[in-house]
Length: 385
Image (cartoon, rainbow, N blue to C red; front, side, top):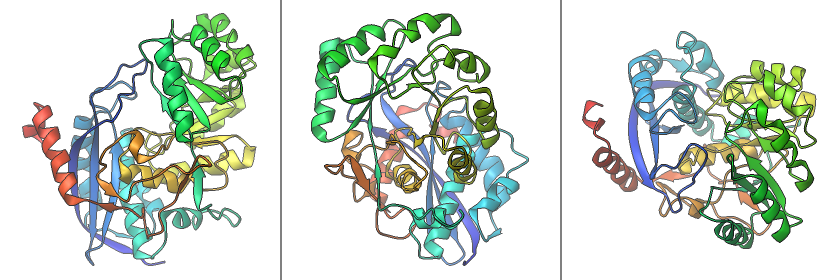
């Protein structure tokens, strides 16, 4: 495998309009913000990564501004001038920086893309090269769609029907107290046979166990992260009271966390968001643990642009990812995206992997510049960075 020498790292803070706002128990943001990481090596090759973040510390503690600070002032100086043989060296280089997983993931993702390109490999194949034999990626990944909280049940039902008509075979609905049992009942009345899951985004407590138990009759694939974002133990108590599998999301930041959760019986399924766990190196460790324990696994999303979407899709193509992932088609979120070509949903609810080396999509510099200008016009803190 060829190595690279890191020459320069540039940061692009962007804001992209969303085709459709995604309302959760956290609320909704008017646009998709992200820190795009551009890494250039000594031979002029470029790797792209994305720190998928929010403008507020809602899903996690990081924001666009904290990621800018950590990346610019700490992570970049650790990398410039370094010779790298593998992206799996990055966690060791960054070990003095605690937390800040989203910031670290964006930089590491750009290194994965760069080294895959240097070795003329698709990113999915490059991931597989870091695993034992038998993990050759598929050429596509099965995906589902996430639907936010609507103003009425009629609107919710109509939007589900549109997504089914689009070709999505797995539907995820956001729930919150007061928007749960009635929602599940109405959806099952209209769509008795669809693959359905509910995502609570930590909106409940253990005191709501009885209410959550009333969701059992609705034949749900899973309930995602019903309890606190930093909890594992109480999820283990809740899982004993439910037939429906609990899927953990926000609670899991490492392979160590997931091993603890499995030992405690805190969840039966994992939503792996590579950005949440600090990057693809840690994601591969979690993947291996899921394969070892035969744990159902899927790849979650943070409304990524085509940069992060292509990388996540490459990981979702690995055979140990066994459930539909939250990596919807481009037109579900952006028109246009900052990359080409767009991801298009196939009739079998799959997205095809790009054929080119690395992430396989091309960043459109003019759209990137426009998205950067939009961020500056929307954010009063932009001149400070």
